[in-house]
Length: 179
Image (cartoon, rainbow, N blue to C red):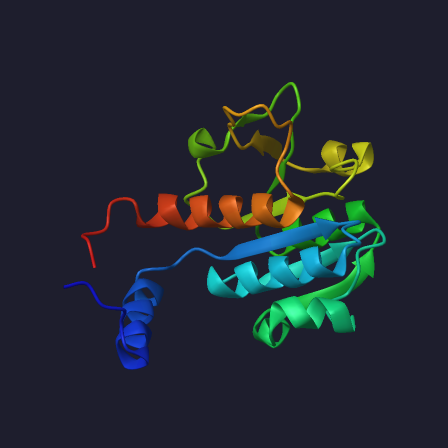
């Protein structure tokens, strides 16, 4: 019979994955204004072990009370930086040693699963309405997209961030024995 893991078993399982995680992971969040999206992004970032988040443009900070309702305190688990212009955020991430890749539909974007994410990488997600700004896209090292087969043109920004973060870790863990 299947049963849910007890809290101590969950901690043990997570500790095993954490020991097998060696690459740093960053995130630039450009002009995401919806507090529930920000809260969800921070919660996913904490779950996947994001080291740093740079807010850019007019991104809502996680200190917003509505963001906190979704983040559930996880904003304390990730180092984050107050919003700066997007190009400055990309520069800061690159100076910190990350390859910076936008999650955006561009003519040059590669499918996320083929992006070679098994390294120190900083992903970039853009605003709910317009995606990443042209200036930001000019500043990044490359772009990837999340393949879709449905009739919807794009994902919610928080969902896209979670999918991309999961794919980074999946690529890092791909050749590990099952835990």
